[in-house]
Amino acid sequence: MAESAEQVHARVLQHAPDARLPMPPLGEWDVFPWEVRDGQVAPRAVRPPAPERLREGEDPARPCSSCAGFDPERVVWEDERWVLTRTAAPTGLPLVLMLHTRDHLDMGDLDDDLASELGRITNRVVRIVSALDGIGRVHVNRWGDGGSHFHQWFFARTEGLPGVLGSYAVEWDAVLPPGPEDVWRADLHLVATKLANWGGTARA
Image (cartoon, rainbow, N blue to C red; front, side):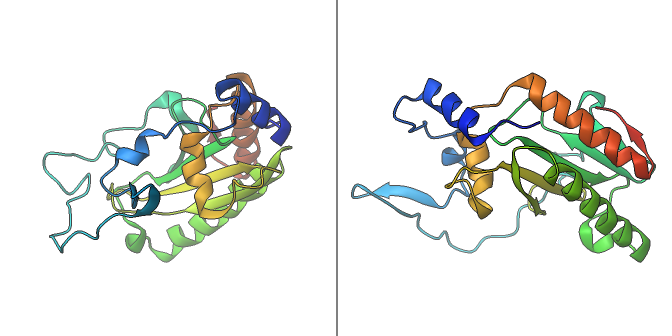
């Protein structure tokens, strides 16, 4: 069972009595779109056009880490075609999961059978995680600018935290202090075992 909104807020107050947490490292990313200008938060300057960056798996200097093998400690569930992984440790949101193809494919490379499986597995993960106590919503996101091996994110947000909503929940995941590891591991185990009801192997 994920923490309640009250438990998360109490944890925030332990780190910052005024509930204003420090800026996470993502503020230093070159793609972070905001800066402080004249005492106010404003968009950064739009950079001039440039060639597309090579992604991991396309750049000879950055071989595909997924093809090199998934860290068995981080695998939550797997079958012969898909691998569901977790973050290395608890984060600010209750659960953050990532679904990968086992073969080196990008999203547009999925054939109809794999695309159908993706839809079914995505729906199952969302249903399972949404049913956990304390979860308000599960957001599903796919970005492909960092790695060329298909990966899809699941972000479960805490129920009842008014500002942690929508696409900004992803940023809040980096801002909020990590939750308790025992609760996190229990939720991962529940997700793995329930997903395995449809096949595959639970690893968490």
